[in-house]
Image 1 (cartoon, rainbow, N blue to C red):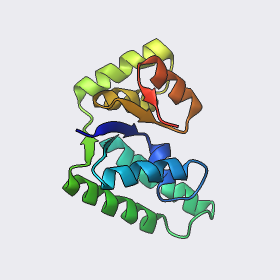
Image 2: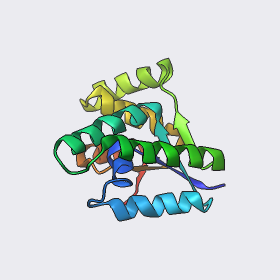
Image 3: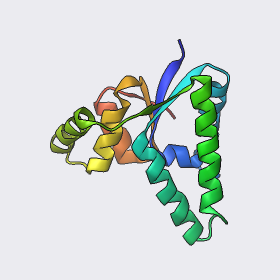
Image 4: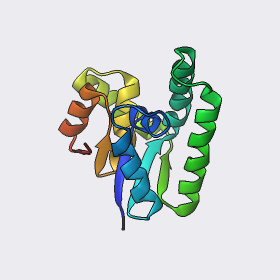
Length: 144
């Protein structure tokens, strides 16, 4: 059985926009394509990725947010077919767990949803240092 790692939106975007950390994300995706690792992210990350790609286009970092998003969706579909990706739904249980994390750590609900969605994974990858600290406190191995 392959190791499971949860990617937050900051990690997902680095797969499609080259910046610090891209090599780490690329390695995880190579492992997933080879059947050695299972990637997880929330259904929420899909929509949030579109927002981030749009921001990059508006800043002139990329030419087309839509093309970047389509590449992301294409690879997402492929990894789903290969059985190397799990898209975590957001349900009432996830939201209630996230609310507990909000009260426990004083974080935004969006970050709390990331952590509560990651519970099926052993490891967590984020490039948000505050979210990384909280994920570590919640018992996740951080990928660097």
